[in-house]
Structure formats: C-alpha cells, structure tokens
Image (cartoon, rainbow, N blue to C red; front, top):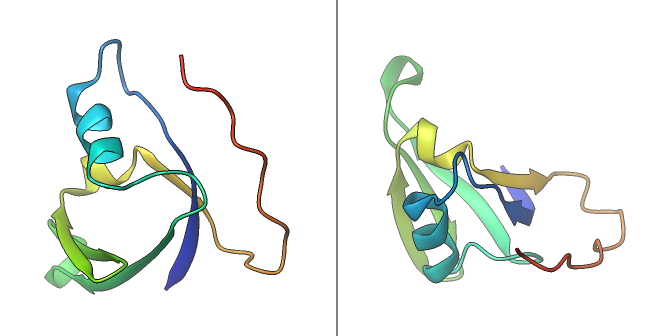
Length: 81
C-alpha cells in the first residue's frame, strides 16, 4: 500500500520516538509504502521511504498519519510546535 505522509503525531510530550521518526525522513508530503508485515498482524511492519526500508512496531507506526487518496492535492504543511 502506498500513501503520503501528512504528519507524525507525538503520543506524549516530549515524544522521542516521534522526533526520531521525523529525523529519519517521516515528513509531510513524503511517499511511504508498506512492503512487509509480520505474520498474524504482529510486529514489526516494514515500510519504505525512497530507497530506505525501516522496521517499525505498530505502536511506532501509529504515530505516522498518512493519506491514501493519492488523487487529492497535497495538504498544506502545518508548523510543528
């Protein structure tokens, strides 16, 4: 499944996991694709951004808000607090 990242949400303040995801390239308007999942819906899932693959726990991946309707125009980037 391919999607476009809208934002990475902080689960708490501060959220070092969300901060690290942003540092790794999980940023607005970037394409992301799920390339593999663990058996029976478990952890981890493998996602690809560009040519880089990442293994994320579902709890970590839940912070990444995406849109899958690729026909919609890109959202305006919101400033991050």
